[in-house]
Amino acid sequence: MAQLNVDLVAADRKIWSGEAKSVSAPAADGEIGILADHSPLLSVLRPGTVRIKGSSGGPFEVEVTGGFLSVDANLVTIVADSATVVAGSESV
Amino acid sequence: MAGSQRVYKQRIKSTQSLKKMFRAQELIAASRIGKARARTTAATPYARAITRAVSAVATHSLTNHPLTSERTDTNRVAVLVVASDRGMAGAYSASILRETERLVDRLTGEGKEVALYASGRRAISYYSFRGRELAGTWSYGSDAPTSEVATEIADTLLEAFLAPADEGGVSELHIVYTQFVNMVTQRPRVVRMLPLEVVEGVEPAGKHDVLPLYEFEPSPEAVLDALLPRYVRSRIFSCLLQAGASELAARQRAMHTATDNAEDLIRMYTRLANQARQADITQEISEIVSGADALASA
Picture 1 (tube, rainbow over the protein chains, first blue to last red):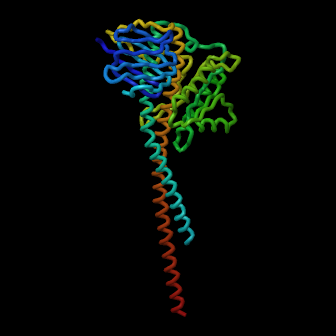
Picture 2 (tube, each protein chain N blue to C red; picture 1 turned 120 degrees about the vertical axis):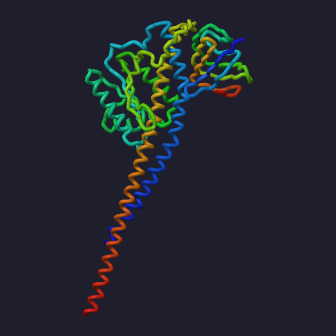
Picture 3 (cartoon, chains in turn orange, green; picture 1 turned 180 degrees about the horizontal axis):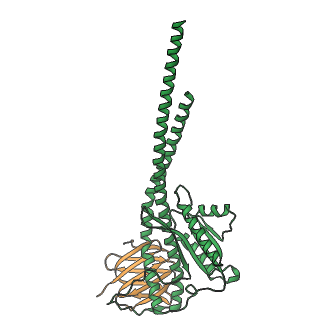
């Protein structure tokens, strides 16, 4: 199965980057889950928790205050205004 | 003659202590500049992500957004000066202020009314000393700006841009900052930030790239509404970061020159002091000899 390439960036640094099985994020119209081969999407994020299930290592959870999310050909970019890591460790 | 010897010794001493200060400033700047450049690099992924997203929205829906459209209802324009908090950076502050004055003159010549926003204590004191009114001031650690400061500045300016004409709204926003080219070259630059023009750095789609058809949540307009202010914030943040790195590079260079000058002065004063000492000795000897001669002939 195809993998997602995820980049999670905050204003002043890159927080997480790597391959993942799934991503879930608080989109404008409700919690959204993204698996591989998701259709292209650009969404505003509400404050909430972004969860990334990496293909290696444990899950990564981060609290964001807002931002947006773009999905494009298995490339997921999450842009957070400010982010606090809840679980897992940062990996760039 | 013993007097002049003492004066030279004092000058050497004070120049030596100045030299120590210059050297310390140079080393501090040199150690911070690496960090400043790392910060600039760290902010790049965010800026790139935003730029990509903005260009994605812009190619899909050419919605007319207030931030991209020209305003004609007011002739007030905003100018943001990004200067430093401290001096000891050679011509850094002077050249940025000169560039600002030139821009203000040009805008005034075009019949526009300029509202100045200053960041950095050097700019603030320059304008308040001349009794010029400032619409907004910020002083933060100018060599290490944070994204919070950038957000604060951007939000104030965006608010001014979106405000109605009779409440101090502005029709344009110009930023004067110093572009960090490399360690030896930093250039004062003027950019027109608002209204937003073409998105800079849009990657041209390659032959085989098919632009994806995005789904927008909740709607293209809402996404653009959320994106554009962030885009402006990230641009302003990058201006602040570049100005910070430039300030440190300018300071390092200025302090290096100052140290060299201090060394030259010390060398010169040492020569003069030696000369004075020699003259003293010569005089003393001739006094003794002539005294002995006088005694012998008496």
